[in-house]
Image 1 (cartoon, rainbow, N blue to C red):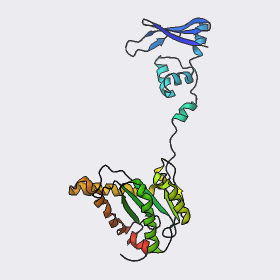
Image 2: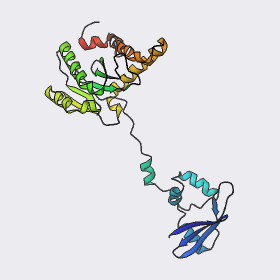
Image 3: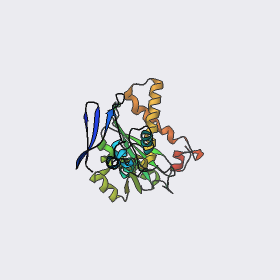
Image 4: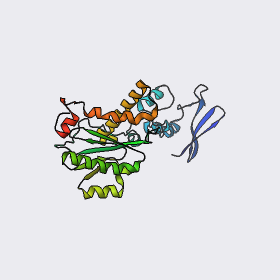
Length: 274
């Protein structure tokens, strides 16, 4: 059936265009502006009207309203819903959301430098004393020890990683095996990839717009920035001193480890008391 709704003054008509025949008509409600259609017509006309009185039809016409709400409107006489509730595939697709983030981390590391997390933060709204607007963080997953380096531009990320690699290799004599990062441009350059291949570093890139896949360093960035804000607010520091405050993250490396309160992160990493 091909239907058409049209109005004239306060009356509304629903008409079957093939053949041309008025199925039902109604009067406009002055309060809510809706037309309450009269279904007490002849048997033939009622049959045609019932053709559009399925729950699926009104579910779509009312902006995918919940079937329980449609039933309430039907009881109030707004329209007739003659069929049982249906499953709307479009509604299910529109209501889809991401699956829950697993609370338990399946990642594990048995030695230092086996798994390094990296992430860049910035640009920050204020440049530091050295005009830096970015900082990059590296975290050893085995010990949770972190390193923070400041940068003026994102392109300096590669040089900071090379410096970091030399430092940890000199201190521990253990090479970096895996580097996990997001798909930021600083980690996707050809020179960065060639450097990792040359030194046998497996580059593990997380899925775009899924920061929880690299949650270790993402949470670290948040902790660093929150502590910096607290210190600046408490001490009334000007905004450009943020890097001096962030640089105090070495206190974190000297604090007790949550799984072993007698050992610091630095102690776990280099294997001696600090």
